[in-house]
Length: 253
Ligand SMILES: CC(C)=CCC/C(C)=C/CC/C(C)=C/CC/C(C)=C/COP(=O)(O)OP(=O)(O)O
Ligand SMILES: O=P(O)(O)OC[C@@H](O)CO
Ligand SMILES: [Mg+2]
Image (tube, rainbow, N blue to C red; front, side):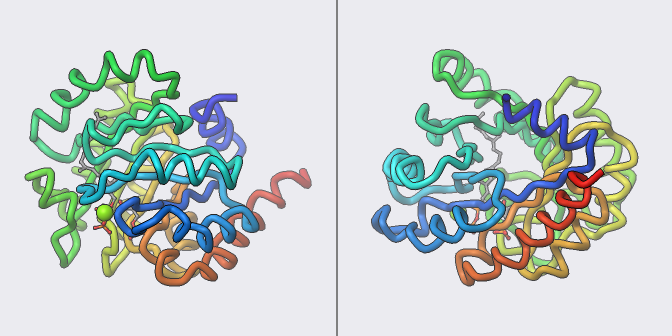
């Protein structure tokens, strides 16, 4: 089954999913990934997202090879640019930065990437990527040269997601930015959830089980955790149990 289909089924059944974000820049040699990959294979992890807003090292393909050697969990590229395409992954979030007004990130890089992706064998998951601002400027906001949506503008967020759905995108990804001190306000997540019927991915600043619960309860279908697992891989146990306990209840019925 494709990842798109899995996400669509999850939306219909109420299943939730956990994506662990691996930043290739945070490892000097691929074997440094061992602790996080071991933890991910022991926990209930649905996807491994791989990418960064800006990569300093040219090690994406090595990192993906290492991941593929140690786990069957689907690897989904989460690219900051067209340079982050690797056909050994399973899928790619084909991000269009719909919260911004930078044409390069709305459609420009997509035109460049399209012929390469077409022959890559990667599953393409078109994704309306929405940055939400917090008290700190995120790497993505800076790198993309775009203004994120203010955290109290719920109707702007909902309308942006609705437009993404009407344009035919497969998913919406709301991101507070990597390492954000606060998660996206739950009222904003709910406002988006109520107005679209696409799988909703939410990430940025999820660094406790309680924050993960809030984001899931507000309506996220997939939560993405990066920084917190890099600092403390053991946190994956609690967060994945939260997802598992939600999904297990659904299996019983
Ligand atoms: C069309 C293709 C193939 C590429 C373009 C993709 C687009 C439009 C990207 C939009 C903007 C962007 C730069 C997104 C990057 C998102 C990302 C991988 C964030 C991961 O977090 P970091 O911001 O790297 O975290 P750290 O600051 O912790 O390193
Ligand atoms: O690193 P964290 O804060 O978990 O963020 C994950 C991801 O949504 C960033 O783009
Ligand atoms: Mg990074």
